[in-house]
Length: 350
Image (tube, rainbow, N blue to C red; front, side, top):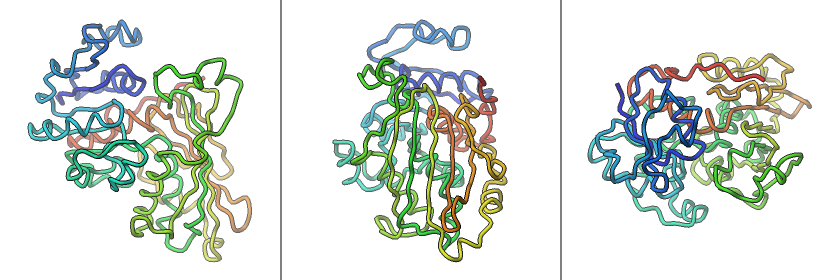
């Protein structure tokens, strides 16, 4: 059995980890930390876990995380990098659901997250945890930086187009994305109150969002160009929808003359043929967020609304494939398991 610890188990990604790991046949959850809620049974905070998780929250000092095989950090930015070195020295694998190990440029990290990076050497070692693109590196990793929810959908949507050289004008990509309010976390903020978010739709982060540099960094990796290259650039605009879970991304890319001759449906189907969690839908489809709710699946539909325009529709659950489910998928790979283990739940409908 894989002994697992979760640092920061009280937020939405934390309880999603608990939901998934409590059903995982090869996992024993040994510690869940929360300084504020130390001593409280997990099931008192989350009654959905009654009879499934019998632990109480503990402080990090009491958790004995160094005895775990894998530790997940479902914490604010900055926490994982402060504890990573000590855990790695004890042979513990780390999966961080925050941004400490996503951005390879430390200056860029400091700009967007407002703190210096405390372990750039470990950042250089860390693997970006999107299995569909970095599966073999994840298998060998000691540290995984779990992707952001929006970047997951954008990368999976653009990857088939960018991996085919000369197919699109990669310097002028557009990602128009929308997320449910759970993407903002479990903290109390005015913009996520029922009376503010319900019956409403709005863009945010229009001048710049911290997922923007992550998206562009990884799209350049996919396309095989140098970091910071202007040859690949995506304009990313997030929106808030009056829903609890789910991301819908509409992606646009201008096709080159040779790209206009390509069979995009066949391209996407071939690219994702062997991916267990990516469903390329039939031509003409329009995937819905409810078709992936509470699952690790991504559904993609590719369209050609004009001869020189590719439009890709991507849906995922922001808490599962966009966060905790993807983290468990990475854990499976890191621990030598089939990556689908514990993750084949059918989406919840209605």
